[in-house]
Each structure stands twice: as C-alpha cells, then as structure tokens.
Image 1 (spheres, rainbow, N blue to C red):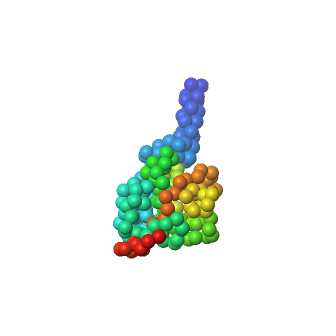
Image 2 (image 1 turned 180 degrees about the vertical axis):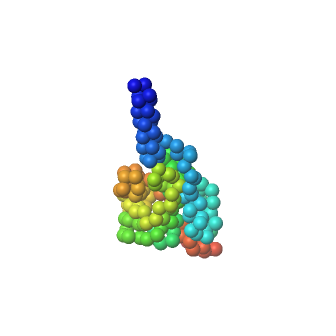
Image 3 (image 1 turned 60 degrees about the horizontal axis):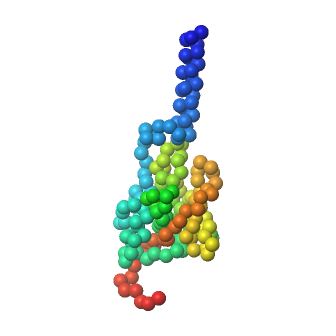
Length: 169
C-alpha cells in the first residue's frame, strides 16, 4: 500500500506542477525571456528613444511632435504609476473612433504562461472624462476582454520631427 500511496502523491504533485506551469503561476523565471515594450517599439520605429517607457515623453521634447490625439504610427506613452513603475509604450496601429484604437505592443498580457510576448491589434479604450486619452483601459488576453483597470497616459509621440521654431500658442 505504501508504494501505491507514494505513486498517487507523485502523480498529484506532477499534475499540480503542470497546471501551475500552464497558468504561468510557477516557474516564471524559467520561461524564456521575451521582449519588453521599449525593445518592441524601438524595433518597429526609428525614433531612437530609449530608457524606461515613461521617460520617452520628456526625452522626445524638441525632437518629435507630441499630443493627446492618437494617430497611426504614433507611440502611446503610459505614465509611471504604482501599477506600471516603468510606464509602458505601444505603437498605434489604427484609430477605430474617438474612443477606441488598436495598438501593437509587447510584455502586457502573459500568453501561454509567458510574459514578454508581442501582441498585435490590441484594443485600447479611452475612458477619460474629457475624451483626451489621459485614462485608458487595455485588452487583456488572459480574460479575453478589455480590462477593468484604468491606466494613466501621458500622451502620443508622433514620428514627425518637431519644428525647429515654435510660433506662439
């Protein structure tokens, strides 16, 4: 009886471990490292910006146009917050309407239990009171829906070079 009980316990432990691995709850450090958001956006653009994602906004001053309206090809910059201590950047793929865009980004949703995955055509919804894209919700693959968390957004960096001289506004 003892060997049968040991085999049963071993089988249960193996199944538990397999389930935890499948859901990405154990062994996350052993998963193959993927790409972070900065590396992804750098690979898709020629902006030449680097460092933590939230720093891109200030780093782009004088180099690129910036604003609070999404445009295809622009970079969406998420603010540094407790939830996003490094911020986040994503590439705007399409504008669906005044409150919805599609982005390409990396390292947001764990996919097959692994972080660092690239996701394409991900929906982002503007939930700001003034429709100024200062607060958004983002599609989250594990729940297959736009998440319930509101994320602070700094703005959009446009791939055009900023004009050398600004005339009053």
